[in-house]
Length: 226
Image 1 (cartoon, one colour):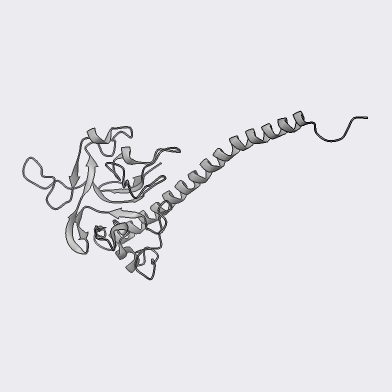
Image 2 (tube, rainbow, N blue to C red):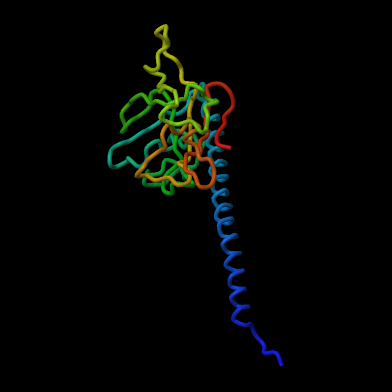
């Protein structure tokens, strides 16, 4: 009579098949989970963009000022979402301790809001100061694969730079930008070069790092990472 149960060889084959299936399925599951988080960040940034449009329509086209910090108490909250959007009820309120200006928490940076910056007069450590955005010369058609260190562009602040050859102030082609720090963000390394407007600083898919932006151009519809 043939004995019941698996032989050692059969058992090893079954284990090998299971291991192979796990090796195939687990990376796919992780990739799908990451993609879902990216989609969520894009959707929330789109909602922030809608809030920005609503605010601008009720404030003669003006958008809220950007805020940056370098002091110890608020350094990690640099470029947080503008409290004006919360005060006018375009975005949900943040934490009671004031660490979060809004409840719109970055999917890839827990404990912090999505980032926001607008060229023009803003605030640095609570004091009034011009805020600038670095914009590629080929914006919005700059190449995603361009080398950041060789990408031609300029910083615009709508206050004193850049100047036209005739001596006038050249306006920034971007009114505002909101962004997620994106997958793989490391606070110790900071933002990728030329972030967040230049395409070479954007997230480009699994295995890469970079920001996920939502941009409000001076003329035209909003756009961002696709």
